[in-house]
Length: 213
Image (tube, rainbow, N blue to C red; front, top):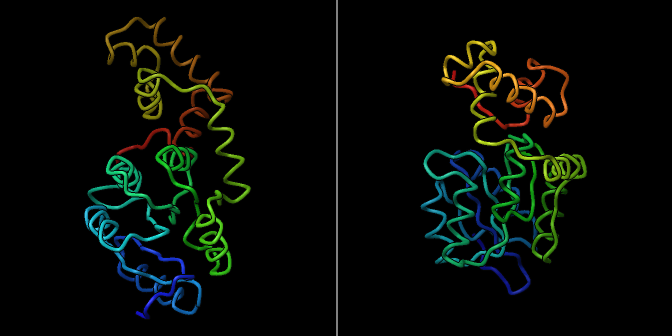
C-alpha cells in the first residue's frame, strides 16, 4: 500500500469474504484521493484496527459471523471511536436499512454498486453528509413512520408465517382465540396489508422476521 497524504481519505474495509476485501482494495488503489489503511475480516479485528489506524471512513459488511455490522457500529459508539461508516452489503430489507442507520451508519450501498458511485459515497460521507440511494431512502422513510410491532405481535407474526390458524396460535401461546385474532388483525393493519398471508410475506421481505430453514 502506498503512503497516504494529508488529502487522502483513509478507508478501513470490514468484510468476512477475502475476495471482497481484496477486490475493494484493488479498486480503491486506482483512486488518488483514497487510501486503504487496512482490511478486517471480523468485528473484533475491525475494532482493533480502528483504534490503531484511525480511519476516516469504514466500509462495512452488514452480516458477518460473530459480531454483525450493526453490533460493530454500536461497539464503536460505546468506545467513542470516531469514524464514519458506510454499509456495503448484499442485503437491503427495510429492517436491515433501519437498524444500520439507527446504529449510526451514514451511508448504505449494495455490493454491486459501481466504483464511481462508491467513490462519490465515500467523499459525501467523509464530508459529513449522508449517502443513501433514493430508492433505499424512500423505504427507510416508510419504515421510520410505520408504527412498530410489539414483541408479542412479532412472535405471533412468526407463527402466522408458519401457516397456523388463530385457533392453533391460541393453543401454542395459551391465549384465547379472540386475543389471537385481535393480534393478527392489528398486525395486518400496522403492515398495511390485506390479509395474514400477505402480512407474513411482507414481513419476511422487509426483514421484520426471519424464518429458520
